[in-house]
Image (tube, rainbow, N blue to C red; front, top):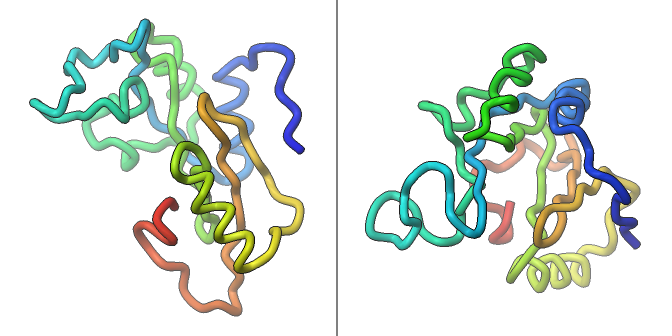
Amino acid sequence: MIAEAQHRVDPIRAACWYVGLGCTAFPVWGSEDGRCFCGDAHDGTRRHGPDNVGKHPSSTHGFKDGTDNPERIATFLRNPGTPNYGLNPPEGVLVFDVDGEGVALWDRLIARLGQPGPTLTTLTAHGRHVWLRWPEAAGPMPRGKLWGFV
């Protein structure tokens, strides 16, 4: 069972905590009342569709602009237009995005392979992220989507 936080976490402290685990952080657009701060209508007529309002990178090179520098993280998180961040996990770590149709995919995966051992799980606006280390015995970690939602 996942316990929900009872208070708002400071995003700068949280991002820096993840950096301590080996992640890098990059700036992500914010949103208000369903409208993304990037200015795109998110209706599919331009660059973005409705599924990534307020959750896509705001920097020039997206996730490739990830940094482990706490001062840079604090600077972009203090910008009113980018009040959120994305994370690049450390090498050898998979992050499963379990929300929407991903819940059914996750349930099928667990039924097939069994429950993972204790792992980092973070709550998101509509579900959770499950962090797992790729086992070295399985060979090189695959790239791109894995089972439809990594």
